[in-house]
Amino acid sequence: MSTHSPLWHPQTHMPTAGRDRLVIASGDGAWVTTEDGQRLLDLPAGLWHANIGHGRTRIADVAAAQIRTLETYHLFGAHANRPALDLAERLAGLLPIEDPRIFLTSGGSDSIDTACKLARRYWQVAGRPGKKVILSRDGAYHGLHGFGTSIAGLDFNRDGYGTESLVPETARVPRSDLAETAAVIERIGADAIAAIVAEPVIGTGGVYAPPDGYLAGLRELARQNDILFIADEVITGFGRTGEWFACQRWDIEPDMIVMAKGITSGYLPLGAVGIAPHVAEPFFTGAEAPIFRHGLTYSGHATACAVALENLNILDEEDLVARAAKLEPVLAQALAPLVDSPSVQEVRTAGLMAGVQLKPEVDAGKVVLGARENGVLTRLLAGNTLHICPPFVITAEEIEYAAGVLAGQLQAPATVSA
Image (cartoon, rainbow, N blue to C red; front, side):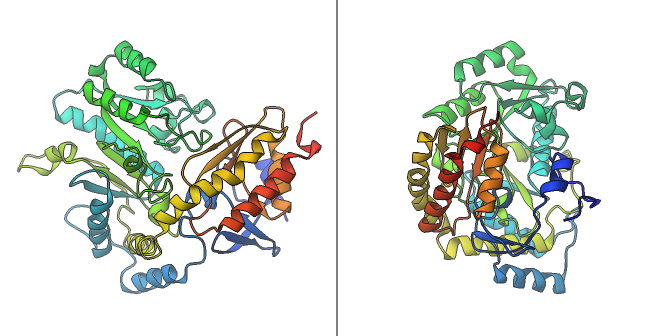
């Protein structure tokens, strides 16, 4: 492969990308095939998104039919398109928020920016303009737009951007310490805090499930201090934890819920924010209602919304959310023996997702390349952690195969750096 392609890969050390580039040409179920003809089991489901698997021709048919009719039309002003209206209705019936309003976006980072801006705008309209600070958790990832970069709980995603001036009103709280979180709120002052953003399961930060009672405690802490609770379900939404939304698994009702990825299973870019009625009400009531001056050209893109609706149909018809729940213990059992490897520090699972944390001295890049050579795709998350988040259509046998390949790589002395 040429090392001189003009393509700049996101979040990538480009000299390495030029040397190790892997061109994916096609996909089918839980597998992808490279331009060179190698078939690979897709453990990361792309970037956490291929919930229904690759190669669904009925999704292609729906997209083609919508494009032939109307590729899209914007939602600004009084304009709408039928797929956007229908998707908003469908989502409103699924979300763990009673009678929500739905703001459609182009993806997860867009959705985070939307939710954070709306949180600040809400408090301004409510006559409390001092409530500006957005809290987030250590280790959290919330995309890489302006707000997402500023609230990142992974330092390497904030470094070098002047976040003290990008969006300065942000602060981090511990990953799972409610007492210390309460202390941070007291130190900053609840009257200065607009919202807290939390992934129910921290994903890119290493796959950390919430301790028992943590999410309910965090939700209550936010409620007691008049802080909006924003659940970032970009990864966990649409079945990843065995429920439609992780908030349902852990029995919490957020003020806003942020979605993307699994909303279309990656077949087209789309995101959404579900908004509780008490947050939306000031913007929906009366002739003098304020305007939320925020929007995207592709908010509610008609073809993306049609694809999302068909994706939800497939999840329903094939009972794939329940399938993800049934595969959770299969994945946990298959990966558990890896902790006995001399290369592994910890194995963490949560729903149909897992992180295999390697010891700091292990050259994880060699593990990833070795697994690829043996038919299994994985990638690195924070903390030298292997990313495992397969499509819901993966079989128990394929999970066992993947675990075996990883076990072989993690026993190899070559994985340890000199």
